[in-house]
Image 1 (cartoon, rainbow, N blue to C red):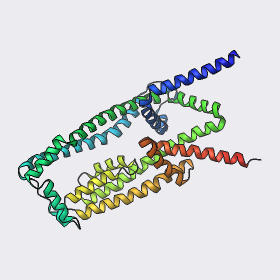
Image 2 (image 1 turned 60 degrees about the vertical axis):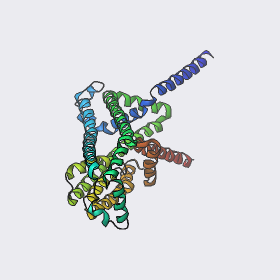
Image 3 (image 1 turned 135 degrees about the horizontal axis):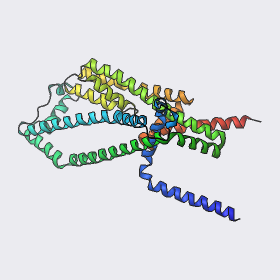
Image 4 (image 1 turned 90 degrees about the vertical axis):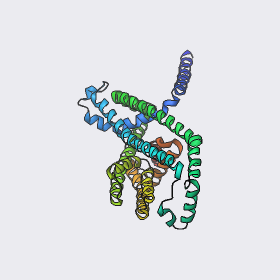
Length: 349
């Protein structure tokens, strides 16, 4: 009787401590999951770069260098994009300041727009066409919601930056102790759920790696194809724009932020045909890549039907945000494995 009481007490105490630890770390759980996703997807690369298996459990230059490389891959294009955004914002501020005396005349191509040309020109004149209108716009920018939005954006940017540094720190720890942690997870899965639990864990790992591989392949392909399109329509720095598009293209439908902005720039410069053609080309490429190619790459690696892969990607992002891009297909892959095992068990006499 006393042994049973001790077992129950340990279980209740362990459960209480687990819940307490989860409550303490709840703000960092998403960051921890991100670090695990990065570690699982890049672990084969780390294994190949590691000189000896005896170095597992020790801090190595390989772990530090790979962590630093991942940080540069993410922060470099984001930093470049933010610097360009700041330059454009400063140029816009100077333009509006100069417009206080004379206003900003509408561009010649604005009135030539079909259907909405006259309305667009009249609205432009109302908002920016005279010194009084420009002063009102500047007053709103100085005292209205734009200042609040800028402060919120800066605060969120700083918060995300420190969050990413936390991810890199945890990733470095996982690289250092990943071998022992992986063995412990697999051993625990086998003890708790048997050989099927072991297989489900391996299947989930494969799904995460397949998602990352599919994400990277799609990003590289879209970056190259849209980079060629940027050069064809005459945009400056097409290689840099293509690289930035490739980074954003790793997220479903995010690449349209880049080629959409480039299309608007072309239209603003009077190149309506080039801007419209670039936007249509980018949308067709995005729809094909995100709705057909990406699910096929991910589902093929884990033997997951196309429709469940697609629903896992979009359903995961709807539920968990960007992290759901990895969690959704992984969950669908494990559920499909459980379903197949259940069907096999039911078919046995």
